[in-house]
Amino acid sequence: MVSNELDGMQFDVVVLGTGLEESIIASEAAAGGKSVLHVDRNPYYGGSNACFSLSKMLEWAFCHRNCCQTPSVEVLVGGQLTDAPTFVISGEASDQHDMDTLQRLAPFELSPETTEKLQAMLKNDRSYMIELVPKVVFCRGELTEMLISCEIGEYVQFKGVAHSYLAHNGTIERIPESKEDIFASTSLSLIEKRKLMRLMTMVSDNTLYTHILDKYSDTQFTQLLQDKFKLSGMLLDAVLYLIVRVNRGDTISSREGCERLHKYVKSIGRYGRMAYLCGMYGGGSEISQSFCRLCAVSGGTYILNEKVAAIESTAENEFSVVLDHGTVRAKQIVMSPDYTSTAVPKDQIVSRAICILDNTCLGDDTTALASYVDDSGVVSLLYVTHSTMTVPSGQSILYAWVEGSLEETRSLLTSAIQTTIDSKASPLLSIFMESHELDVSETELQGIIVTRAPDATVDLDSAALSAQHVVSTFFSK
Image (cartoon, rainbow, N blue to C red):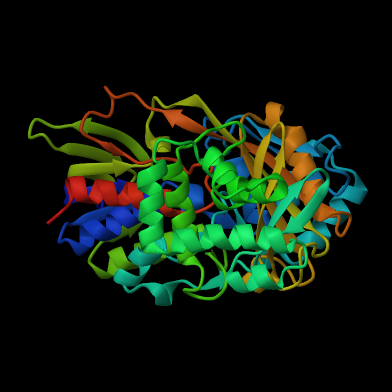
């Protein structure tokens, strides 16, 4: 692009960042007839939802990581999860984008053995698609309905999340989901099957479901499960922490719990026996790009690797956006929180672990969701294999995340991964990092729409709902 080529151009909306929420907003605005300029400072799509090859993942940590959101990235090559990191990437991001991976790691003075292990993995570099924020999609959720209504299903492919597991007390057990799975289960007693079937039948039947909501709306959900449905032990934990996904120690109302359970049960059977879908080739990034393509089809303009120097208000109640290739004017600005110059980390933190394994541990050519439960908290886990085209054949990736700082939750994450692996595989490479929510200045952002950073939920519906709220509030026809 020629320098200053954008100078003086006018747009209805300028969107900064290509994460899922920003991409949905951009596509909806363009479809509604708005002129849209969609900019990302990075040379890739996806923002916080991006996914990378192994070398590009390390490049992200060195060159594109927002140090306020992710202060450091700890990398362990081989070894045990309890070992000290092989190297830690911290400090401000570098602008040296074109370096070879091993050349970039030279200052850490890696041992010949570690270098050999990395070289072996980098031979299959393009076979890895590692997600920054792994998430799945409800078969009958807000995002799925949006993908269908926008007719962009051809842009993205999914695989069903075949299994669900509950890990606790040093063991991991598969939890049946559909009615067929419950009847076929050998891990549940006949009484437990009847209890679980009764609960699923209640939330599947709209009349019974409405009756329960009305009668027990003021009751805590745990009490409802214990008193009315007589759930206890592993079965109670499975419903609370795996299906409804309550945080350890939190309490939710029966209404909220039943609504979550209702959504889960209604999702089963739409595309098979599963409630969730997992995106191929890295779900969040692929879905973000599908909305970007839709925006471009509607006339949106895209620029990657474009720095934003300044944003200023004008006398006409518009905005002036200073970019590398000129200054544009916009009636409205939508931005990811990491584009604000005064953003500071908040106390809300999600700690994440990414573990590339030398073998499969929860089945070949499959995907699975798991919850690890102990007194310290609940860890969410996503397991993917070569079937999602995100890891070389014979290997797998296990993602784990939990709310709290890495200092507080490291042992919890480690226990969750070790219990799930259950000696069936060994880590080739493990990554630990924190994701901080950013606090932005309301004074600086007067009139600017700031999207939300990815949260700790397992699905992408919160991003879709947040984007829908922005669109209906600011860009409805």
